[in-house]
Length: 474
Image (cartoon, rainbow, N blue to C red):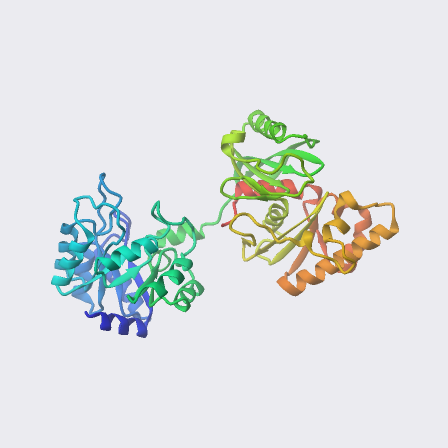
């Protein structure tokens, strides 16, 4: 197969199924691999990626489709496992592969071989060499070693690459202008729109494995999360700090809760959470609080001055003695409401009206947030009168005895609802929080077509609990 043939095949169909089975799994059988490959050929694919000598030989004997192949072999002395040594290269060639895939990073190989020497061996056999790379530096190194094709296979799987559950589209976009070699997008592609995005950013083809050919991964991905056991929930607002215990055998229930006035220091707040978790014997906690919290570290990296000594606080296992997922209160509330039977599966927007104003949005079971925990800043939206939404609707700023103040809330809430509906098209807009629970708000909500959270004033706690029971995808 020439590089011209390779490009031509991808013009016919840019999707390359990776037909592989983990050792010892039910699909680990050459005849089964052949049938999986045949199933993709029915839809017009022009190339298959395989792993292992037995599977390569079986597919080459049964089908006429070109094969990209590799052999995985792990060594204690090296992180390189994709066709790592000369022996695997020779075995892959002997099995009949048209294109040999191998680790294209500059990491030391287990037997000391150099990538350049292995590429020369591949070319002497009349085959093409495909380099699995993890970043731009690896791509440049592999190209200098003479490879014919680059694939982003290892992005997210090495210490030198960015970790993510999503495909690395940024690497594709950055790589394409820097090379004349064909580029394949590979790694965590699960949806058509992701494949189309990679192609639009310049990839010549997209390799997809588990989403097509691995029922084990597909089952794991689709298996519903069932809330079980006991968890702790924390709702940290500008006025109070609350801790609750939830128990579930499939249907969560709030068992006990306690509340104290918000302590002045972060250390005292952490201590309250730590002691409560220890007292109730929970090792998993969800936390809802004001500010912007990084979902991976639990750090409050941005906040307003409504809570003293808040920025820089870390809600994590090292600090509180229990596993913890902490998010902004608007996000947590939206996630909790979205898990209620009344709203699950719907596209919903949630406005949290407490001391301040929070906001969250859930669509197709996914929480709308930034990669660092950024939340939609409805609270900072300016109203026609020059005030922000938080200034007009936040509980700390409202005089509930004043008809003028209540009218101001209605005007602001109507403005917010109109903006939300025109921007996000939610099926439902739900409000929660202490301010939303006041009886004065009932006619306003009815007039604006807004619904109260079924969890009432405890929505923050329920949101925190659902972070622990069924964490959102990030």
